[in-house]
Image 1 (cartoon, helix red, strand yellow):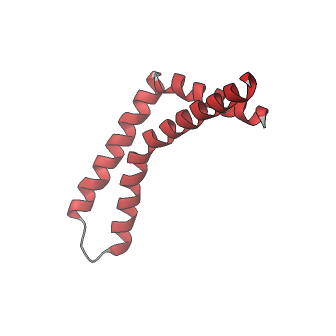
Image 2: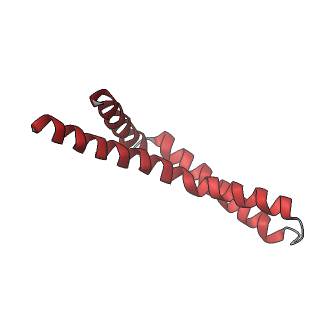
Amino acid sequence: MSDELIDAAELGEEAKRFKQSDLYKSLIGFAQQETMAALDELSRCEPTDTKKIMELQNQAAIGRKFPDWINEIIHLGDEALEVWKQQNTE
């Protein structure tokens, strides 16, 4: 159990460092562009083309979700670190 907590905490720390990187900032920019492009195309899409509408909605959602995924890894890492600390101070 302790190894799993340490692994989660380390992954959370790695995600924090990644979030400060130029690579992360570039990926966020690409994700935002992808979302905006999907929303733009969605506004011009035929209202009866449900397959295309669903594809564009998914494309926009992925662009919005990327930062959430990184933040979730950080949150889980912080929680794991707290649990590990509690277990090792008792």
